[in-house]
Length: 213
Image 1 (cartoon, one colour):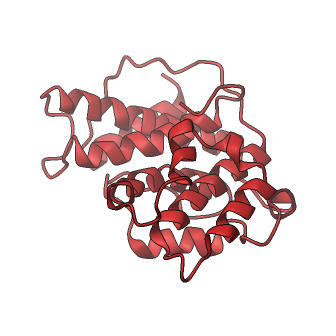
Image 2 (cartoon, one colour):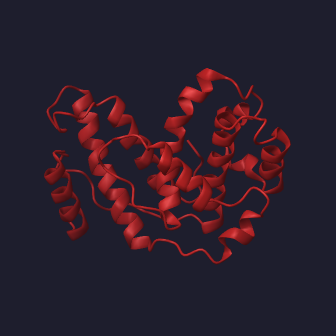
């Protein structure tokens, strides 16, 4: 077992998570380009703004222009593209968008935001606002320009954090099967979904060439 894995197992155990000790520790990783990560972060921002900010405060055209001007269509899944065609008052989509924003936390962390928490608690409204207002590209700017001088997390730190969430997710999956591998106050479905979303984003950043799924 590698030193980073030992550290991560220790972190998990101290927090009440019990991942399997037989998980693989080495596989090929290839960090995606900064611009690709920035576009994915800002693509999520666009669909969140579409649903969460009234059109009276943010006209449709401004969001659509941001998406098209930055070529963000390729940074959205087919289902996410459909959000931008849906009513901005769609309550069902609005309820689901909080899960999608969990995916953005690791992406924002890559560019300087706080490190993703491991508690499984969903992000607060304040945290969402911080990411949208302080750690994403303004709607009237070009992402390629915005990201050019941005500092990013070292690849070694990204790999170690992805491995931590890999271990956490393993404990969550076991708990979903009925095993006592998470803290007693941790909901394997609700809190587990948060861990899943954050782990997904971290793994995506380290899988250059793969899709968004």
